[in-house]
Image (cartoon, rainbow, N blue to C red):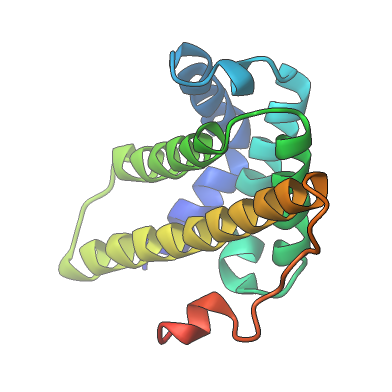
Length: 163
């Protein structure tokens, strides 16, 4: 199967993937707030996801994903970075990971094509969860700044729509 090999490739070439994502973030004129963050911080965040991609893809809602990304959303809000920039940076990261996986040379059998599509589905699902929790954390920080109590949904948002 191709996708375990692609995951290994991404994890072992995390520096290259991270550099690509960082270059796109730095060149995107819609991201002045994200560009104001230190390269050290951005590299550490991007690199961690790349190096532990197999863990993140299989963790689902466990493994600290909720806490980690809600905390990051709160942090970005308190830093004054616009929510659309936070979401856009996540989308850029997702797109560059998928692009990197697609660029890897391989003889493609029908099973390999299916495996590549499955990897893309897993990456997209991971980033959907990341963005959901970034936004929730960001909104919590906004409510706290406004003196409103933080609200938690009674039903998990993804379960409410059948996930």
